[in-house]
Image (cartoon, rainbow, N blue to C red; front, side, top):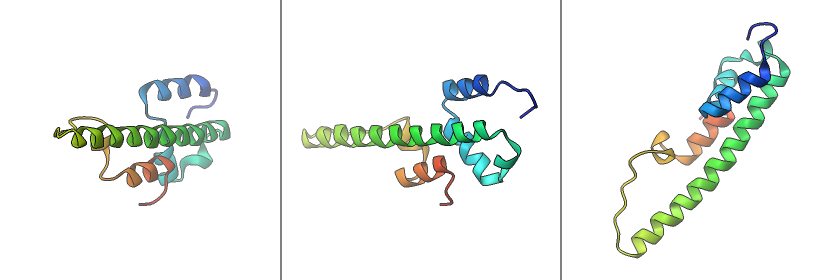
Length: 101
């Protein structure tokens, strides 16, 4: 990140695009944290944790809705979203936290 860059504006843009977790994962995977402002890496880590919490809550709700649909004899096909973004909920969480899978 260039010297004097607006960290807050960068974080707002990353949050608006929904890529905070991906940025954190990339920084963790490449070891780039030491070359970035500490406030940026800390904010990305906190944002990734918030995204993980939201992802887990949404996944639980999705599972509840699908289970209720099945209970009522309805077939469900998920076409887009978190359920297709990774092979498993655990791998999505690990990716966002920057933990090797």
